[in-house]
Length: 422
Image (cartoon, rainbow, N blue to C red; front, side, top):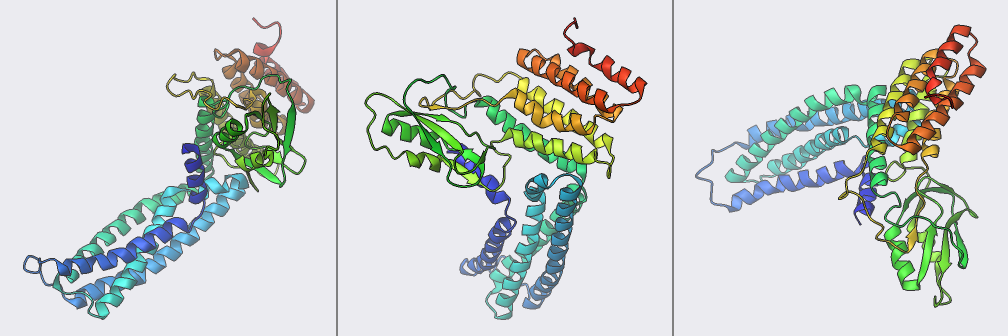
């Protein structure tokens, strides 16, 4: 349930209209809350605020908020376009989900709606003495919120479309996905084992990417039908008709006529990959940013080097031990889910950089230093994979680099990965 709510929350955060709509409803409610004060006997305790003063204040807010809201939308759209063009289009949904920008836009639109509704109410003598004072206080409070929000938002939007900010957002989303997968390597199920029972495969019926696998729903179905299910398509897998989603393993006594097609309903299929439960997508996005920076038209090896450092941090976090209380045991004992492959993760992250940066000695050296750092981690699998990828990267560099001194430097950097290395 927690993962399902998190998935829905992230999808909602990618919609720009949700928070402004909620703020509009709150602002309309706030303009009518002032009327409640007229039903409370506090008229002797509050000063008499004239309708003209409240009217003037609301008019200033109404005229300025629409301009600020329009300006904020234009700035946000410019930042989104910049993030997509300078980094990668795959990072667009992370940038658009920026809380500070959405909150700022919501505050500006909400203040505009509040001022319009309250202005109409004041013009029609909707408030008495207590109501006008309460409305005046609310208006001043909203002014303060708008000014504070605008000051913070200007600082944020200046960085929103910058490449460093985009890389940081992708790193954060990837780190969260890696952490969740590290704590639940089998998504709450059990490891895959060799099977010898009767197996029936479940195939996809639509075209898209697996965004989420509802292992809990699969467990309930498996218990009710007395079967075991082996997931064959992890989040991030491309699905088309004929591509296997899962295998159903029956057992003696399993009822006949099981509606196994319902298993496909536990796989959320979408047109695009998401970062939530697909850590490989985050690694791919980072490598795309580096590859674009290494393209001849941009020629920015510094960005590729920065991405390499980011990837080293992510894989270092992946190798860290998980606390006992954070590790999710296989509660869904009838659902077998394969673990994510570390070799696949390395290829997603480093192979494009090794390919596109093979002709740049600075990138080659930094990449080899990254592999050496990961090879020193007390993780046998991480060490073997890092050393193997280091040798592959050297082969690419040897086929591309022409200057003898560069080749010598590259080979010296890979000495740690050679079979005879101590």
